[in-house]
Image (cartoon, rainbow, N blue to C red; front, top):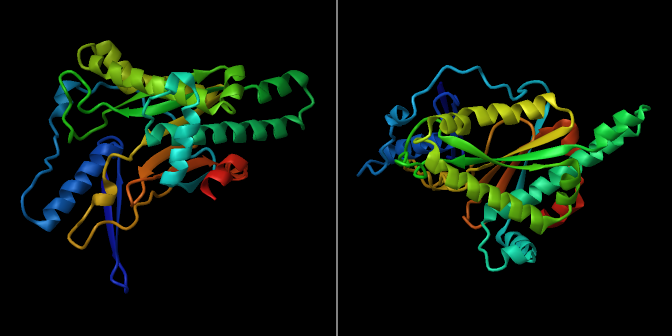
Amino acid sequence: MLAVQVNTFLCGCVAVAVCGSHRIFDACSLSVFLAAWAEAARGGERTIHPDFGSAALFPSESAAPLDFGVGERRIVGKRVVFDKEVIAALRARASSDPDLEGVTLSRVVVVSAALTQALLRADEARHAGESTMLENKHRLQTQTARAALIAHAINVRERTVPPVPKHACGTWVSISHVELSAVERQAAARDFPKLVREMREATVRGIKDCTRILSDKEFGRWALVDSYAEIAEKGLIREDYKVIYVTDWSKFGDYELDFGFGKAIWVSLADVPLEDLMILMNTRENDGIEAWVYLDELDMTYFQKDQHIQMLVA
């Protein structure tokens, strides 16, 4: 369920690697574990107390394992860094939408929208290329016109009624999503302000829905379990669908970890066997976003050629 490896180097640096099962950890609770461990290692007053009793708020039920297609393709991960100047430019660009005028846009929403556009363009380019080799006209149409679903993970802690504790361990994550038809998806790949607005509105709705999770058991099960299965099924079974997963780790304070020999100088992710996934983390300076993008190997070649992304992170 949990594995830890500590490496020391001749230069005096230390690398701590941690791998946890999603059966008992989500990203937030793994960060809580690391923060509590680091605090204990330093000694002194304990301020972080992992909560293991929150399962009583929503007892687990037997459920079929979720199939996200893990292991079926070769997945490649790349790190893309958005500094504060680029994020400011993205915010200014998104604010051209009258509905967003005067709205404070988070770093996460503008960066995830920019990356989503790049992934949609990469998918479009790949399938357009494949379609040129197909002789069947109907097959060509279904390959080039794909709908899209953008799924954003939401940390439900402190957002439910009664509130799940901030340091609750377990998997307390729901999903907000934006669903786009084939035509809407083509427009979204080019209309940045509109995509930002739709992704932001979906997240706001998802956060609001957290208040129902504990009071409405049927809805709670859908939000915490069944919604994942529905989204994964669309991505695996339907060839006319592109599913993109977005998860935000920027508020978990991983760069603040200090085991007694200084704060972390670099936090990175190991291989993640899930395609079409972006994980957003803080930069060390706490003013930018490090995006870890995981794609099918062929999709990654198109993503890396995307001129818009190249201009943003040059």
